[in-house]
Image (cartoon, rainbow, N blue to C red; front, side, top):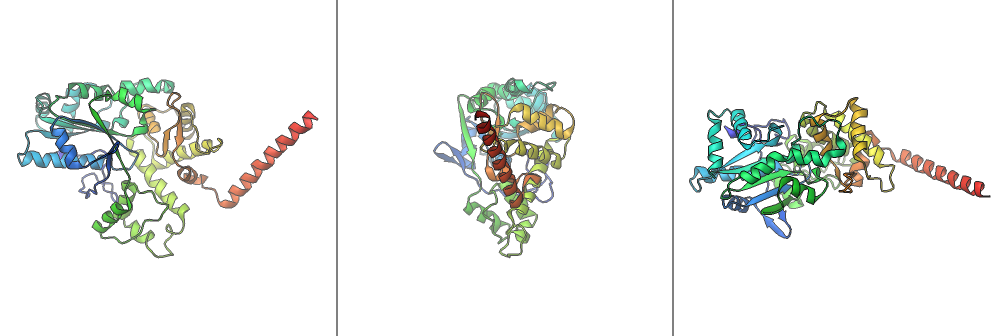
Length: 393
């Protein structure tokens, strides 16, 4: 039954169908100076060890966790272990704080005839918990208190902390989400109660070798241009939809290969459409407009990347959508793609990359416009300088 239900954000890149069997390409799973693979993680989980796995958007967290699930499932059905995995999508459990209620709802969503049996098995130590999407949780009734966001996030993580406290020590648990959902490592560890006993794992993007393996398994020979991010989400979508062959081939006429602006425009549309799946009541183009507004705001700073305050983020949402964000809207704003932590104590965000910030939406100015804009600022600053000197004289 579980195989017929969504695994986090895993979708067929071309069709969006969650009932798909995309082949997994192993990613580098890093803990400090140690590399983990799926088999090692599964062995550790069956021994009762605990993990927090984090990465940015589209980096393969849900795919990696699904691969862990499949290996644990295989071990259970071949009678190599008496423990079995339960893969929870936290996005399905808004407002729930009781682990037993979460497991019952999960079983009901699957169509399992006896959801309470999952609770009994879990409390008896037979369940390895795979908990996907701590960055997709929120609490109810929190509109308008953006400035208390750390407190909100702590409250939202109550179910995660309870699962950690009540999970029997002989069975492991994995938590996954985006690292920059929190303002600092300290806040994340406090909110998740993962200060001790947890391995902290980070996923790397595709290497050149992994991209080649992925393309070989897909039967493709196209090349990825240097400007393209190597996130599995993007490579997977482009490969499955046939875009790699059509636009990233060696053919010089391919529109994206020789025109990064058009390529980025396409890529950003896909990422924003994915973010809209959080079901905050807005579509991908609206998500993109919010990012565009924030990119424009970031340009006012010397670095061009930020910082962007909490109030500026929520104002951008209000300006674009015409209303204050609700609970799910706040979750979306906390996980906007391409934004990272600036000052932990202030909760500000900053664009992670100059290229990403430059390429967001219609703010991709032509070179001539950029030159005119730069000249305009130079003239304005010269005018200010002349005015100050004149006044001093």
